[in-house]
Length: 384
Image (tube, rainbow, N blue to C red; front, side, top):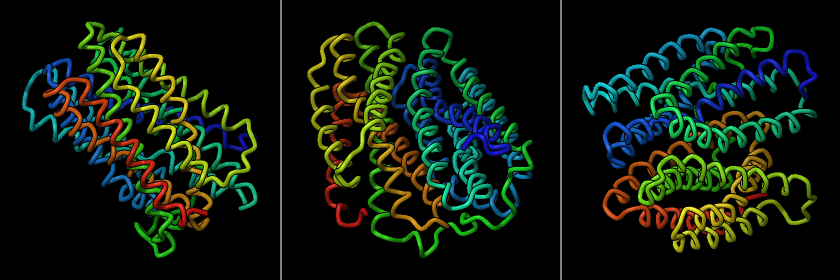
């Protein structure tokens, strides 16, 4: 796929921005918690960002589709860069908590969904016979960014400074987005892509809502796990290991994705997703017995090995169940669903952890895993 003229340039440009987007939520969490000392405050600000991103993502994508990527991206990135700078300044200078939340809302609303924009370029360049391979490549890129980004920003925040994590995330988004905007030859024509409508009759089907619920659950998992792991390391006097532990889970997840991708599975993908979700529920339940950094690291391996396969299967089922002309819109809504889950988890888990400690955070993770398994079981008939 990357041999197609111009493809490698826009794919890697979007990849840089995707990495920045995946770093932003945890970067805000570390930044606010460091300066306020409150997980609840950090969760509220992170939630404000994620809710804004979830609600506005499809709307922003629709306007980009109508007016063109090269025209809209620079404007969005200017707004996002300014909002990110205002957010950092408000936290560091302790100006106003309301002002911090408003800056987080502006930053979330102006995040361009670079994964969807990259998919739109593939749709413009390739015929339908080659789109499946291109979308698989996009899935891998999204999964790697979503798994590696939080670990990377955690390490930066722990070993450099919490401020550096947020600055690095914003810089990657702006750099990747501007590089993508500069590539005019591969940009799709204005107003012809499926995102011209926010919701189309072709997407309103049971499978769409099942997969939407699964992606909300995955977002809830990531949001709760980030807070729970961070709180656990703080309680054990090793806050600098939060990013390392999250990185352990990410590496295990990538390993699980590799194992999944190198095998031929005879089981239908819907049933395979259900089986992995059931295992995932059991693995998260064991987290409750962790009593040291080392024991938590080992248990996170058991949890992480199921994460990437669930994400890949979710993307594969989205492709299989949605009409080809609706794929980019569907992927955008799945991303927004995950962002909404992260937002809700950040706010609820942060409050619970402030009151009852990291055990409350891991309890939230277990509940979320059960929700994912239940949703997948109930939606089996709708998934092809």
